[in-house]
Image 1 (tube, helix red, strand yellow):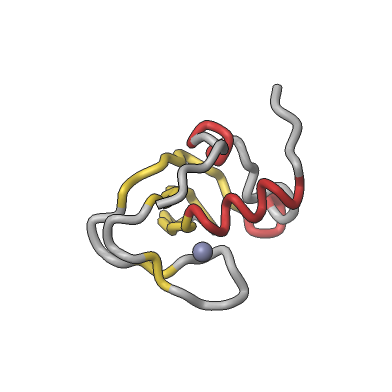
Image 2 (cartoon, helix red, strand yellow; image 1 turned 90 degrees about the vertical axis):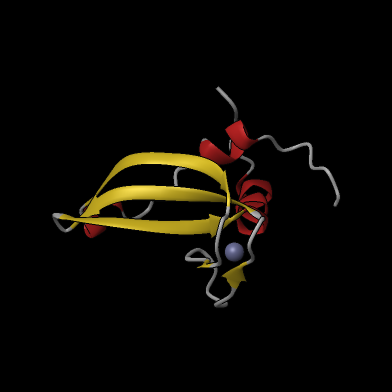
Length: 90
Ligand SMILES: [Zn+2]
């Protein structure tokens, strides 16, 4: 597997809710990088795909519309987003 120079910390620094935080009523509670124990649907891409078992993914836990929600985004999508936006590091 190709090692990336983008760290987990970089990927966790991406504000996935930057554009529609207010619209969605989302209050982000936690986000962390995990190695998936079972397959999840990636919620980032407009092209639906699954995150395979054993892959790196960012798991978000947030309160949306006063209900707890949890979703996963695969590392590939995060890296694509990171490169596209070139988020300046603090
Ligand atoms: Zn994805």
